[in-house]
Length: 225
Image 1 (cartoon, rainbow, N blue to C red):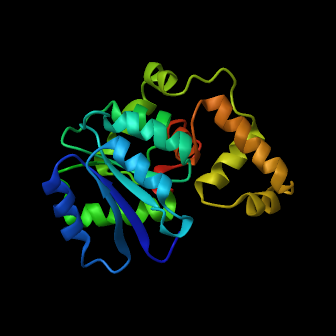
Image 2: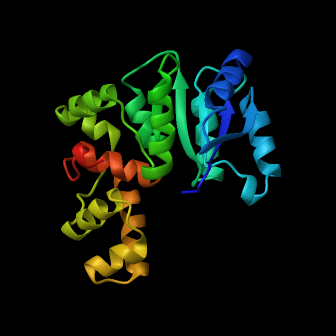
């Protein structure tokens, strides 16, 4: 987590880009370091950036051409797995939860969100890697009570072992591999092996997927986030 959160904005509506920039202009701990009105251009811009100028979080619009937001996210997650992503959309859909897990998206914000929620989402995603609105909580509870949907989210062949569940709980609490190793009396390398095995088992892309899997499967409680 950096002292100032560097934000990239990708939206094909110029008004939205300008509006979000203006909205954040008075926030001392958030700076907009990059804007783009389409996916291919954004990817091109990212490739030219040095590590110190690279964004921490990208706010991505869903409905864009020639490449929609989810297509862009898929490419970004492949090329830059550490880049945290918040999806912006005019349409709030329950299917977003599946995308959040599959693509490792950190948060989903309707475009009509108020400034307080907007700032909170950016801050929490920077801090915890994930942000849930009350609507997201409701969706998660719905998914938790629907076995079919739960299975469709994670095509897991194998159940997680007790040791893997211990690792998952500590990952959810933002502990590093070294800290998890110390708590479980195993080496950081073993922790990393567990982490990779967990990702493979649950079919998720990154830590965000692990956190959501843990919540959906009652391994970790929403209240703790």
